[in-house]
Length: 313
Ligand code: DGY
Image (spheres, rainbow, N blue to C red):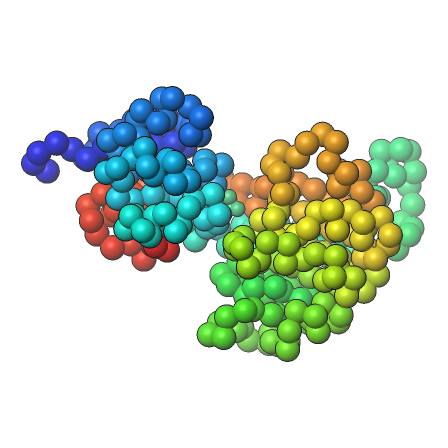
């Protein structure tokens, strides 16, 4: 490489072996958000930026980085990035779609925990009780509605079909490929009325914010469970607290919340029959390593002005 080496800001912790792969570039390793001066200063001559979903990349960050050409995010979600600003500036944005299995495993764990009442039974054992009642429910024969049959939705469908669930889906896109044995339903309302479990797998954007609101929750059966491992904002949390409290639905399994971490007074934390885990869908050693490797590969491609199959803008 002749001339000055392109500079990139690395705003997530990376293993030394991954940093070595970036030795053609000048790196500023600044784990940060935009309130941090060091981050803004480093961005002033950065051509590349590597972030995770915890680092907001809004218009102000992009304005602070006039030379920026690529934002490589170590996530599949891009709701932390102002995509419109990136497109206007022709900044390439890349994602790491290598986490579907890990997220789908977690979704099935939440579904199983809810249906077999595992948290409740665990609490009872800890309180000195040893009883197999009240009984849980089988997964076989139960209807699972997948809202959004993208990569993760398909991975959930495969697992649920193996568990002999009756898998249905809705998707706002006409051109989703579908999956063997998975039936498309006419619309969200129809799907919600029939489902025993609803699992949400959509991006968070203006069209999907509060997609699961009071009206949608009211359509679900009182025996049905909601699972969300996409983004907290897809579910109206206030409506969910009410639906759980009123017994409008039987329970919820959540990997994501509208605010992460939640305020200690967040009512959902005390709602009945809710399982909340701290955004751990992709949190396995293998998957996080694959995501970091993919993000580094994407950053290199962007800095070399090459195409990436994982570019979303
Ligand atoms: C993703 O990749 O979007 C996961 O939710 C981790 O942030």
